[in-house]
Image (cartoon, helix red, strand yellow):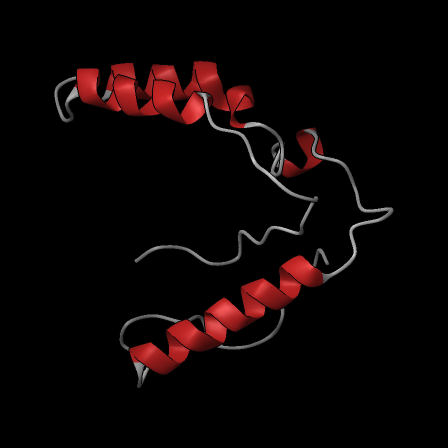
Length: 103
């Protein structure tokens, strides 16, 4: 699935009932993750390595933390990132969707 669906972009102003929206979005993401990934494209440069271990973003993340040194708690951000690097995804491969964002 590499194409956009025609429709209205969700926003706090366009959503009448946030609870219903959250349930519908969760249902969509759960359904998406149930789709068989056999033969799916592997994580790579073409998809910004989505689905790969987050260590691929280590240098980029550390650079971003450094750039934000006057705006964030660098020590805390680095500790959080270091902790995240020790985690690993458990389970079988699933589809991921980056067509949604946090407002």
